[in-house]
Image 1 (cartoon, rainbow, N blue to C red):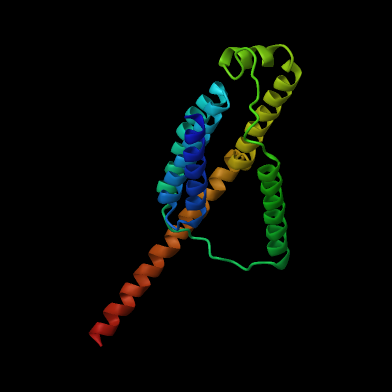
Image 2 (tube, rainbow, N blue to C red; image 1 turned 30 degrees about the vertical axis):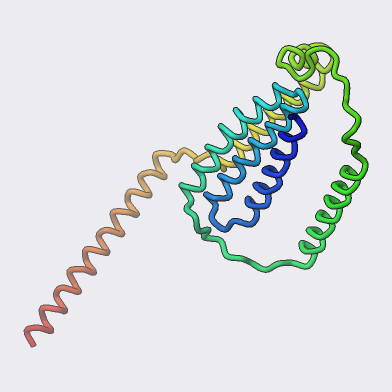
Length: 204
C-alpha cells in the first residue's frame, strides 16, 4: 500500500510542479503550488517525518500560501513590469542550473534501490524526537539559525521601510506654509487674469 501511495503522491508532485511553471494565470499557479506542497507532505509521512509533514501543511500550505494569494489579489493578475531584455549571461546561468539539477536527478534515480528499506528505530520524525534532538545534540545550530532568521526579519523590515522621515523644524514648517500660500496666491491671480481675458474676448 505504501508503494502505491508513493507513486501517486510522486506523480501529483511532479504534475503540480510543472503546472506551477506552465500556467499563465497566477491564481492557478498558486493552487498548483498548494497541491505540490500537499503531495510533498504525503511523501514526508511515508518517510515517518510526521513533524516536518505537519509543518509543511501548517506553515507553507497555510500561512505562506495565504500570503501569496493576498499579494496576487492585491497586485492583480497582470504585472506592470515589462518583459525586459534577456541578457546572455542569464541564459547561460539558467542552462547551467538546469543541467546541474538534471544531473542530480539522474544520479538520485539511478542510485536509488527500492528493494532496500531503511530501519528506523524509536519515534523518528515525531515532534517529541525532533524537539529532543534540537534541545540536546543540535542546540547550538538551532540557536544560530534562530539568530540568523531574526537578523533576516529585522533587515527585511529596515530595507522595506526605507529611510525614516526627518522631523521638520518650526522655521522649515513656516517656510513651507509660506511657499504654499504664495503658490495659492499665484494660482488665484492667474485664474483672475484668465477670467478677465475671457470676458474681454466675449465683449469684443
